[in-house]
Length: 303
Image 1 (cartoon, rainbow, N blue to C red):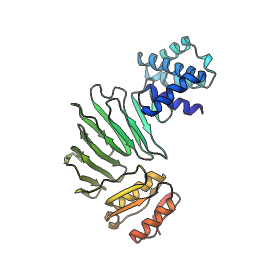
Image 2 (cartoon, helix red, strand yellow; image 1 turned 90 degrees about the vertical axis):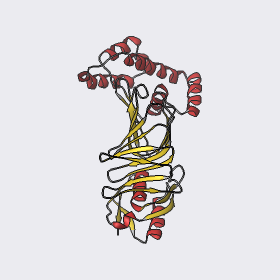
Image 3 (spheres, one colour; image 1 turned 30 degrees about the vertical axis):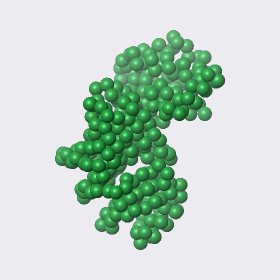
Image 4 (cartoon, helix red, strand yellow; image 1 turned 180 degrees about the vertical axis):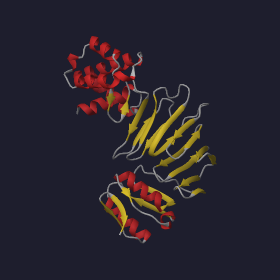
């Protein structure tokens, strides 16, 4: 319960709490005095640490002290303590993988859910299961740069500042558009829905037009057209995509890995798969592909 409370306070203070949740958050502040006290404590820490620079060699010890204090009753944290804690470089870490209070980055991590975030430039990002997005605290001041692990759908607000998505595989640069990015150790895929994007991959720039898909699996690089975009808001709606991409979406959704190889993984399929029934997914996949895929020790394998 307390962890959930911290999560909401963190999202609200950083400006990343969805609008509909903000209404409920403010109502909770009015009706719950304990919640309000916690909020005021965190707000004071936020304001104090935003005004101070913190030597890196004090961060770990400062965080250890603060963590013990935060588990104590709120009344023990006076304003005097907050100033002292800030001055010895506290690094406060709050859940939902959002780090601030002296950190250079803010990070969002989804688990078994799809979440939508609105950034300070009014861009919206819908993140797939088990994905992570991070950006600097000064996002949108001089640039708009984020780092993605996993999959996300981007609706980028127009601006003179380019919006840049860094992944382990390549970099996507846009100015105002809608597109989907997926990146893991083996695949890198970008689907452009409207506008235009440029992709820097292995030192070469590739420009996409609406309705085009960039796909790389470390051995093949392909730019092709698509008629309907893939999505994962409800079911996994995968349209004319390589089987390797479909497998990667099962990995992301169900927290699996895979041990598969072969040219057959490059064949394209169109499938609708549930996000809450792995057995049904494997049954559908095996019927369509004509293989005998199974999960053993959390790994998708070919029997």
